[in-house]
Length: 267
Image 1 (cartoon, one colour):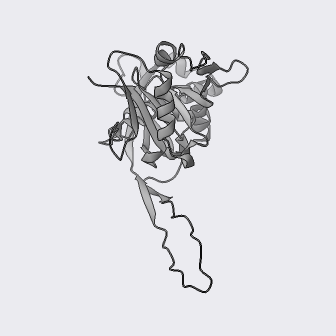
Image 2 (cartoon, rainbow, N blue to C red):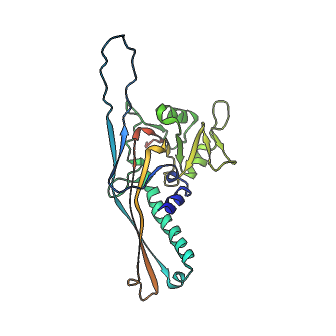
């Protein structure tokens, strides 16, 4: 399990910056609601105590299943080489499934992703900024998106988008002083920065969609690693050996207000 999680961190994308849990399934993560600010006190006056409520976000257990076949010749490789092959293949299959669910998961028989959040561009519950249909975002749209994110979540917040969106929608944007808002970071391992916030590339995100959020409040749980089982019966006549990988996992936004979205208007 440690090997799988370690490799997942190297895959890049949102899965590398989200919080990971490796706990028994059906866990509930406590989330404290912010308390009201303190007030000035009149000397000797009685102060009523405030009870701080704690909400919980529950992670369920959904099955991720993958079956693949290898030849008998591959099975004859050295033990180390064969085990490494299994780790690489299963890691890619299972983690790519979780990575997609972090964005697009519906929560019905699978994990819950960012797209499950109700994105609203108007009203008191506004958590999204829309740019005109058929156009591209402008500098003011990125500033407005940053303004939507509450200060408590802005520390450590990151932009997330796919590679095409970065280079077609963002790369050429300049601020009012004609300076590019995207600054590449060739010296470090990160992609770069937009208005001082790191950029994460994840191709599971739809074209034109841009998220800003603190991904410490987006989590996935891989309960007990990956169970590997082998069968020679189903591919007996072809000389193949079938391997089945089974994982119990879930993913979910832990605090939805930790994320805002910039996207193209529907019409």
